[in-house]
Image 1 (cartoon, chains in turn green, yellow):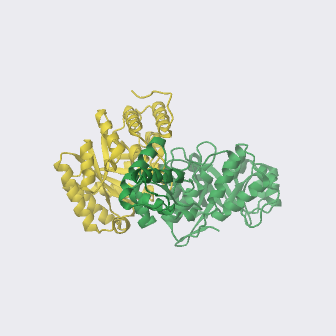
Image 2 (image 1 turned 90 degrees about the vertical axis):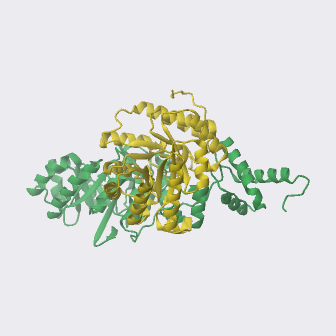
Image 3 (image 1 turned 45 degrees about the vertical axis):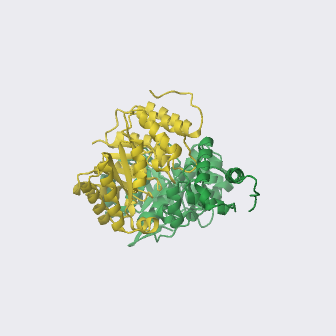
Length: 359
Length: 275
């Protein structure tokens, strides 16, 4: 179901991860594909793009999930009709050279013409002359610059007059793809195509998880989204493609809610919203406190309480100093055993001759 | 149009949980950053004392071409540690969102303004350049943000840092806000963008288009949570979209980036790319 952005605006999210996985000849099982489709639907994707090869592998499309099918041949048209798929997409070559399009009942099947940013100028004339009759949507690809949006806005206005919707598929050549998608949504575009982690050929796309969260945070906080499945989606992508998700990848990186710095920890302790845009649990992650060079006294106290290590408050500054030295020598944060050992050694040397264990 | 890069790998970057650099490592990284012509290196937080403070002092001894700055809370004690290090620029951070003022600082707006004025005066009296960070600017009431920026400028701040502390900005908005600040004040503006929604590079580019003259970056985009504006990505994007940084040797930049990653990982690098 399209995202409700309020004021009668809806946003359709289209995902094209599967064709990209397929393009790179990555092996994903039939069950893996079906599982992937279900998870995409769970997180808010309205249409999942597939092509003939993917459809042959899936064989039977899962009920309750909507697909947009890429037409590249007569066989594809047959499959579209046979599987009763309600949405299709094709490029200009297919549209202009094939009579097959005429077989599609545009009343019951939504048609999308895919063009690149360079082609939209030519399309103006085609739209105005009625040569795109039967086309419901136009997807614009290769959108990589903010300047492009100005032209697209003008194009959207023309399309609206002919009841054609615009789908934007930003390109991440200059690392702007998510930002372009967000700007487009704020300027009334009603369809956005992205892929999970922006995975794709050439320059990659807008990252689905970033676009979804940005819509929720920036555009409309009330829009219903459930992103808890994102970690499982990430695991599947890693398993199939070998792509390692960076630990600080926005929205899904496993360490984005791991914190250490004393000032930061203090702020989180008082109210996580001081430093977090959204709750970790919203995206299926959790918050964790690291102890290391940048820790402050209150983090040490918190950790000691968590590990049930007895301590005197006056000793914390000296213990903190030892923690920092150890962290620097190891070039990382410390694990629980190392923290316990520092405490034991400190109290044994400070209070040698006393039985300090478990006091 | 020009955008000076303020590299904060040794401060915000190092705050990424699990990174712990010693004196030698920070000195090596500072040299590498200097070798690629970074305008300013935010070297760390002297108020942490110990190894952190000594490393900043060592960096100052190098006599690098890059300007060296330090990060401070609005606290005279913090500032004194920076003065001990002899850095060229002392940065103080002033939370400007209602959330951070009330929840984090447990103070009020008047306290922020009064304390900021006190700190700016103190730093200027000691003869240092001062930059003021408007922390959590992107969640602040814009009128209050402008008020604080204006007061900071009147008190003698050399530059204002607009900090998108939680990465909530989008390009249209940062463009409008930076443009408005530049329209009202003649002060230099620095953008500090976090990458929580994957838009740090785009937001930084938009800020420069609106008139920001300084951009905070980190090597590899490392930093708290999803990190900061990625140095290499910003340079690549700015060459194309802003027609700047064309003189930057991307090959050398990538080599230096790799070298810095090796240092952070604690591996001895086989390369020796810095002068």
